[in-house]
Image: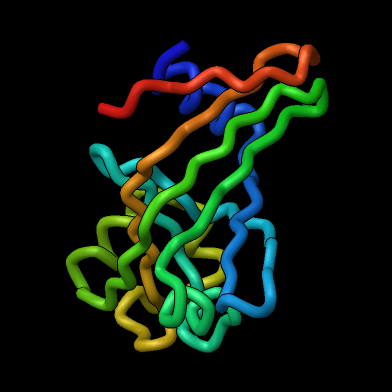
Length: 136
């Protein structure tokens, strides 16, 4: 099991779930505007979203991508928030879906969450055993 297996599952499922917390409440929500940028996992969001408020207090998150057969991957690590036009344009061009939701990539409402994965676990079978995926 390696990072390419993880990426293949993510592409197959398309949408994942991003979980964040502010230390008191937890939020888990669907995320479709994501892409791997070298060793980081980036996603798009709105500056007014609950996940941004959470990440400002606790800059850690976890993604989960699951197939209908139950295969899934969990990716967790620290997150940085970026409002640079270079990052926003890079993600905007990498993820065509974003054009449906973000009419102007220069909008101050559009923020990029940049996760640096520290732990990746994948479950390929229904034996309920995770396998660690080596980080690049």
